[in-house]
Every structure is written in structure tokens, then in C-alpha cells.
Amino acid sequence: MLLDLDQGRLWVFLIGLGLFAFLEVWWPAGRRLSPRGPRWLRHGLLAAFNTLIVRTLVFVPLLLWMVWLEEQGWGLVRWVGLVGIPELIFSVLLLDAFDYLWHRANHRVPFLWRFHKVHHSDNALDVTTALRFHPGELLLSGLAKAGWLAVLGPTPVAWFLFEALVSASAQFHHADLRLAPRLERALRWLWVTPTFHGAHHLVDRRWGDRNFSTLVPWWDGLFGTFEAPPAPAYYAEVPAPLGLPEGRAQADHPATLLLGPFRGLNQRGMRHFSSAVEE
Ligand SMILES: [Zn+2]
Image (cartoon, rainbow, N blue to C red; front, side, top):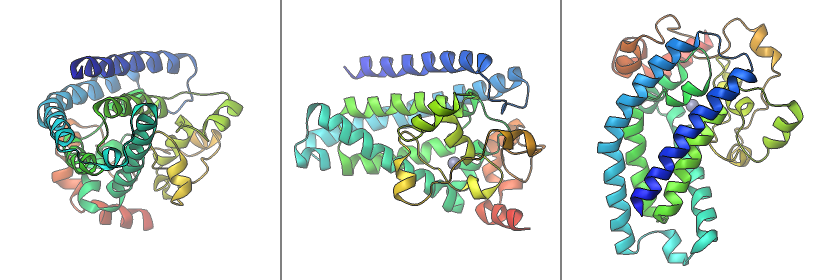
């Protein structure tokens, strides 16, 4: 069954990637700002490299870990005795809440920020930004998730469902996609939209250190980190609205993408970043 679930998740990823890539050609929001080809090549190669690492070092160990936790009867879900649809809803929501806290920690803890910064150094936004993560961030998040799985104890079905939703949602909210304004404002109450998450990628820290949610946007409301996104015109008015204030020219260099967290620009992590913003 685990293999079927894994295949299902892979299909969700591939269909989502194709669908949002197609939609952003027809309804672009105009935030891509750089040629499509090199972005697909750069982020595609990074994703292929990450897949190799994550499958062996994170995915398989996490599955074995979940099977072991199930045998031990560990976790909130099992202690409460939740099963079926209620278990799926409860587990997915609590996994999403954990993702919110983890994402926030990635911005607050200098060591974590070194890695998460690679994702934020993208000077544009489109569906391929959802592929742009440093392998170190994925390994660290795998470790954090292992701890949370032990506390929560979701079923493998809930976990795969959550992972598939995160994959599709990340493709959607990074996509350079223009939704009808009324639809977008309505949807923003239920789900993280491209406008909601686009604000999180703005250089301006008024927005850049807000809106951390992944699936449902409620966590930002609940924990006081929601900031209403600027109007779409903002992206055309500000010369370089997306990414980080420093190191813009080198942001996409393969050495920066892979070695950035360990040297040069990123050496001082968040402190360097904060001081660059305050200056
Ligand atoms: Zn972030």
C-alpha cells in the first residue's frame, strides 16, 4: 500500500507541475521577470539532485520510522483513538500547523536561515521556485518531521495525503498566476494563494517576514503573522521586488545555490540579512 501511496504522490507532483506551468503561460501575474528556460534548467537540476538525496536519506528512513511508531502505538492520534476521515483531517491540519512553525523557525534561527535563504534568493517567482530548495533544508526538515511524527502519530495515509497537498499547494502558491481578484480574495480565507505567498517573497520585510502558512492560511491569523499582500501593481512599481536585498547578481549561480549556506554571502546568516535591511 505504501508504494501505491508513493506513486499517487508522484503523480500529484507531476500533474501539478504540468498544470501550473501551463496555467502561468495563459494567466501570468507578471512576477516571473526572467526567461523561463534557464529557470527550468536550474531549478529542475537542483530538484533532481534533491530527489536523489531525499529519497535515500529522508523518505525511506521516515517510512520505516512511521511503521515503527505505529507498532509502538505512539502519538496523539492513536492515544485519542481517531480513525477514518476525522483522523485524516486532524492529522493534515496538525502537520500543516507544524509546517508553519518550522517555516517560521527557518526565518528566525540563523543556522536554519542559511539554508532556507537559498529558496528566498530567487529574484522572480514561478512554479519552478517550488523546486528551489537547498538539500540541507530538506534534510533538516526531515529530522524535524521525524520528531513531530512521533508526537502526532498520523497514519501513513494521512502523511502521504499531507505531502501530496504540500507539493500541489507549493506549486500553486509559487506559480506566476493571476486569479480573478474576487476569486483570489475569497480563496485566500481557505487556502494559501499565489498573492498571499508572493508577499512572503518580497524584499521588503514588512511582507517578507510574514505569511508563513503552507496549506491553510489560518496559522498566520492565529499567531499574528498575517500581512495583507500589496496590490498587483506593486510588482511593476518597485524595481526589484522579489528575493533578498543582498547578492542579487550571484543569486542563481550554481555555487551560490549549493554552497551558499556554507560560505561567502551567507556566512553570517540572519544577522547579516537583518543589518542589510536596516541600513
Ligand atoms: Zn520562507
